[in-house]
Image (tube, rainbow, N blue to C red; front, side, top):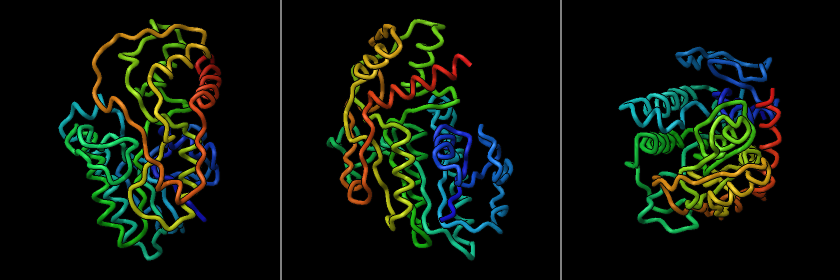
Length: 293
């Protein structure tokens, strides 16, 4: 089945193309691997450039998860995480040859911290009003619900994903690894107390590709299904990089303990996530080569 990937230059995009080079990348800029089958839709997202392209599935990755930037701007989250998706879904609904399945990515941060139970399944209550980022992702899921009458849409509620990347990212693990491997500052974290569901990026990519073979449509948790503390992450990286990571004991927002319930995911596909230790080992070895280069 022909699959296109909208937005190939981000963390997930580069890993989808690394593991599945036959996917057709579509966007404003080519990915780092300079794919020869790239389709340029320009900065105004002119999806009519896809009119002559037959595709059965689409993975939609245009957007931003940089909370620090988009939460400090009144409309940027909406502009980056809602408008492009709205334009693409409308385009697909008007195509004569409609896709079978579209994959989008939202977030587990929408689950209501004060009301949810862990492990957290897809029926747990949500709170759209945490910040601009979360609100934009909930709005994106509302768009999906409107367009499901035309094709299957799977909204991946992603947990804390990590893995090899060419990008500087503000998330916990990339931030620690940048400090650890460049040694440009004291290696530290705000706090080691939170428990999160950390999932290796290869597992996410492989799960999505398997989900494209199903007829499922709806929101879906994708993570490891295991809770590991930030202290666990630090311990593993300390051993791999031969460093000491200190805690600043600062307050943080978000869930203090979060674990995905993967019952629905595992009813659809075979899913055996990589351990935190193995995923970090592979990631560290890759990032060592990258930062040295």
